[in-house]
Every structure is written in C-alpha cells, then in structure tokens.
Image 1 (cartoon, rainbow, N blue to C red):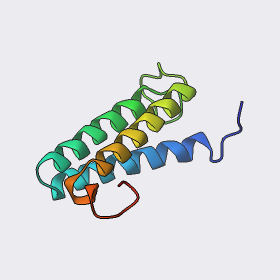
Image 2 (cartoon, one colour):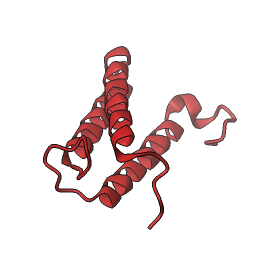
Image 3 (cartoon, rainbow, N blue to C red):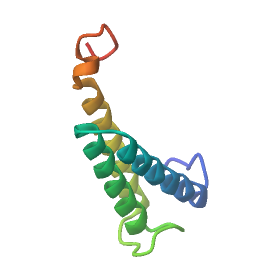
Image 4 (cartoon, helix red, strand yellow):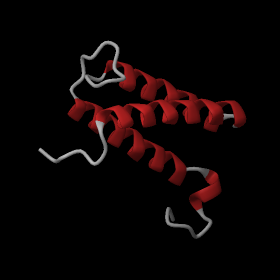
Length: 95
C-alpha cells in the first residue's frame, strides 16, 4: 500500500471544500458547464459521505475505491475541458 500524503481527516475537509467549489461554479456558470459542475458536486458529495474515513457518514466504500472514483472524476473533468469548443482549436494542450 502507498502511504497517504495527507491525513484522512484533512483529505475529508478538502473533499468538502471541493464540493463547495463545485457548487459555487454551478451557480456562476451557465449551460452545460453549470450542469457539469452540479454533477461534479453531487458525485463528490456522495463519494465523501459514503467513504470509510472521518468525514464519511455511511462508510460503505473503502478508501481505495474513493481514490479511484476521484481519479475517474478528474479524468472526466479533463476530458470535458478538452472537448469544450473554447479549447478545441485554440492551440492549447488539448488540440
């Protein structure tokens, strides 16, 4: 097993901050971007509450599954950003 870089309690607080950030952007953005931010908030909130760590309330997911869900979430967010019309042909790293 790889040793955690941060304590589980701090990770939980950061997960809650990430959920709040998603909600703020869901409120600020419009159209599909707002929907993606709201979906990200829902996934992150559910992942936080279902994980077996200090911030978890139901605690049915092992921490490794939590990490894999966060990895998938990050990859999906990157894919969505790269398929956005704003980044499609601007010469950035997504082209």
